[in-house]
Image (tube, rainbow, N blue to C red; front, top):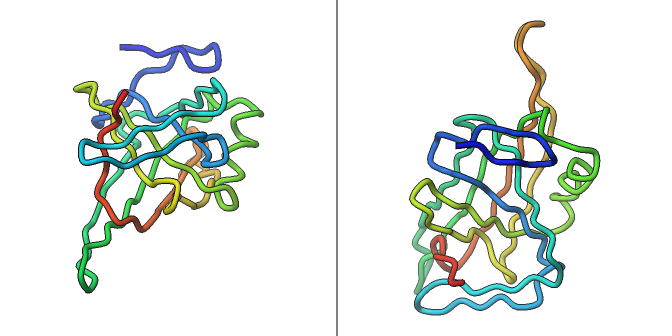
Length: 157
C-alpha cells in the first residue's frame, strides 16, 4: 500500500502504523476524553501526516502506579524519511519542543489511537540522523513523550 505525502509516493510503515498525524494543541478547538475514547475537533483542516520510515515508528504507553491513580507515559520514537519532508513540515516539526501536540496513529487494522491530550501534551525533539556510512541515507527522528492520566485513547469520529 502506498500513500501520497507532499506529492511523493511513499511506502507505508510496516511496523504496525499506516499513518501518524501530528496535531499541535493550539490547533484544537475541542478535545474531550470519554469512557469510550477521545473526541477532537481541529480549528483548521490541516492534515499533517508524517512521512514514516519503513519499520521506523514505535509508540508505547507505560503505566506507572502513582498514589490513588495510575499515570501513563506516552512515548513515541518515529523515523521520518528525508525524501518525504518538505521545508514547511520540517519547520513545523522543529517546534515540537515548544508547542505541545497530540499524535493520531492509524494502525494497519484501521484503529485510530490518540497519544497525549490537551492537558498533558506531547513535547520532544526533532533531529537529523546521518547515515552510518556514505552509502546510507540520512533520515530524521521525532521523539515525543507525555505523562497522562489515561492510556492511549481510541479516536471517536
